[in-house]
Image 1 (cartoon, rainbow, N blue to C red):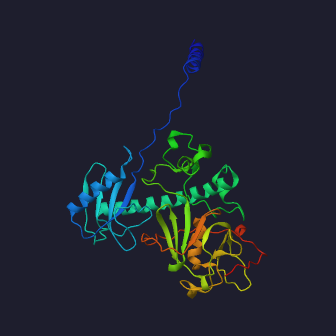
Image 2: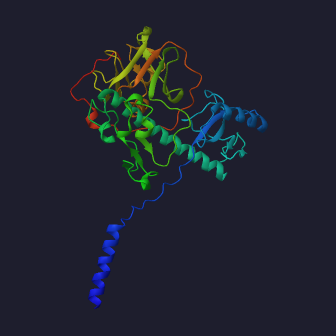
Image 3: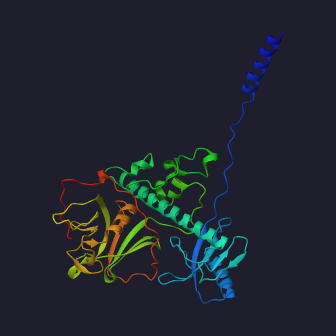
Length: 369
């Protein structure tokens, strides 16, 4: 009898799940980290002046409802403006924190105050956010240029790390898992890559859906693909995302104005380029104009001077950083115009280890170095 009852119980359970299938249980997505919008503020203003200027700034920015950031006022230093977002700036000290509920906490702008728990936490959050934004911008820019070249996106991000000349990036800079975002439980974890979300009518704009960092809010300001501008009169190179500087470098240029002005692009990226005299340093980025490149140098004293035959020289550690950040297709503008005042100090270095298959053994280059 017990055997018959056990059989009937099993059959009842079986038919229950057939007639009433259970929905898949998934953890609800967690809360996103708020976006921290850093702005420079005058150091000689009173708290009341900061409050009034902040009120005007928030009105000017007109944030969408629910997208308001936490605003971090930082002391103005040379080459940063006031009341303009500084998405890639890493401050040493804070003037105030304006929370989304309207509360404002003020600090001594002359004090690093790392022993203050809230200051230390916010500075660490800004550092993490800045590093995440840099990586996101670098990979989105590479995907953007990949699409422009191939009219499609790679199936996986590893498609960006092909051998020369398909080396858009040397490495994928994320250390967390990359997934397709198919589960709500994964929405706030890892790197979410969804190439099917690309919209061909607005390629760059749709990159915010194609590639995301789980749990990290989108920037409160519009970022654009990385670009390079060289200001000949100042021996200055700026790497920018739209209006926002990401890096700045002092460069060496051509003697007697031999570095040609104009709008070009990066055509090839070469690890350890070979020359007859070893003058190209450790990396070379070939421009779309014949025989010209951005490269390193074995003559560091030439940086900041007009001595080359036309190429743009960087210190080797800086050309290695530039090589890590930009991809083939990146726009390069060389101009006689004066540089903008907005060129804040560089953030901590960004470096991706270059690979052997990014070298071109047996090829000797003859750029106008």
